[in-house]
Length: 348
Image 1 (cartoon, rainbow, N blue to C red):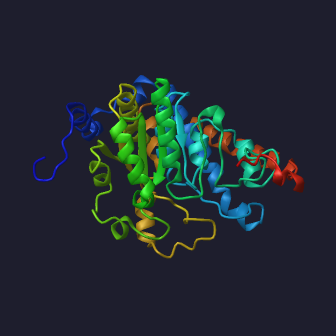
Image 2: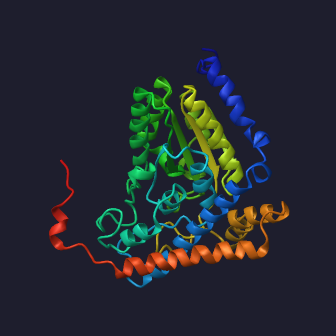
Image 3: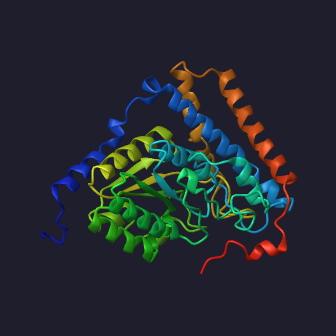
């Protein structure tokens, strides 16, 4: 050791340099893979449409309990999930609708779960914060801050033991880096070089507290540096930037280098939960972030490249609306679970 700095092996030093220069190395996906980028836009529109319904559904009493919209954070979910292989795994947070849709989730079953119907992902008994779909590699949203990190670390250990070449990505907010589970799992993942991507969605508020008020270092990525985990800070409002960072991290994970920490700087447009009055932020701050809207950002790039016309963009927006309309109709037509179902699917 020198000056208290941890000793890092050559692979980790190389990886750190790769991630830090990632912004300059992002491939031009728009020209090389236009279909992929249009799919990114499609999924972002679907997430925006789905989560924009939450306030009204909550006000109407159709969604019981807390619900947390990811409006404004669509680029993180989509950029990350479309950089993974279908067999890769993710864990989510209490704000998990966007992650599930980005991974290929069924909006009908999601809406039914939000409305407490038996046709939902968890048979109407999990609600908004407990969406899961193992068939697409979505290991579950979680109402406990940071809890998905532990699940993801266990899944990454399993993938390592099985030599499956799977990568596991855990989404969490900046508030979770203050939880013990982040520190414990980060340490183990680094020691065992697990194929784990720790993706922090820094949406500027842990409930109503800013990171500058809750993180002693002032730089969230320094929490990962303490374990020798390479880190990246990316524009979470730019789906291509997120995609590039996660693609690099996934490649390194499959090669046995170990975990990566990515901090995606983004902003949630709604309150922390349905009913949050958001008195802790100013209109000017909100307006400045709205100018960076991830959907408008990508739409403009696609239009400038000449691969998405205004009419095509409007058609995709209508498609998203129709899908969510259909999901709501499906949910409202579905039955509530019978009382005796409360004792089913319990494990001890």
